[in-house]
Image 1 (tube, rainbow, N blue to C red):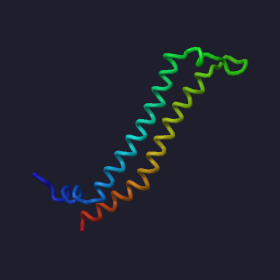
Image 2: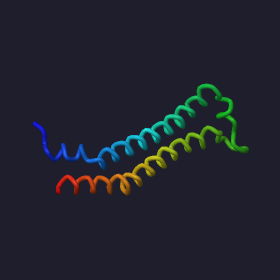
Image 3: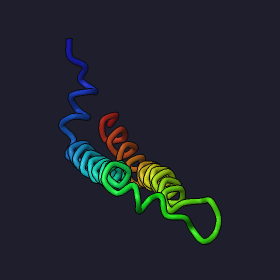
Length: 102
C-alpha cells in the first residue's frame, strides 16, 4: 500500500535537495569528529610522553586540556548541526509539506 502524500513528498525537488544537503553536512561533521577523536586516541597510543608533559609547575598534563577540547569540539559540532537544522532544514521541510498538501 502506497501513500500518495509520501509519493508527492519524495518526488518534490526540494525534498531531494534537503536529503542531499543534510546527508552531506552530517557526513562532513561525522568525519571531522572521527578525525578529532581518533587523533586524540592516536596521541594516547603513540605519543604518551607528549600527553604526559606537565603544564607549568602543577600536576595537570597537556593531555587534560586536549581531552577537554575533544569534548568541547563534540558539543560545538552538535550545536552547529542543530542551528543549521533549525533554520535551513526546518524551513525546507515546511516548504515541502506545504507543496505536498496543495
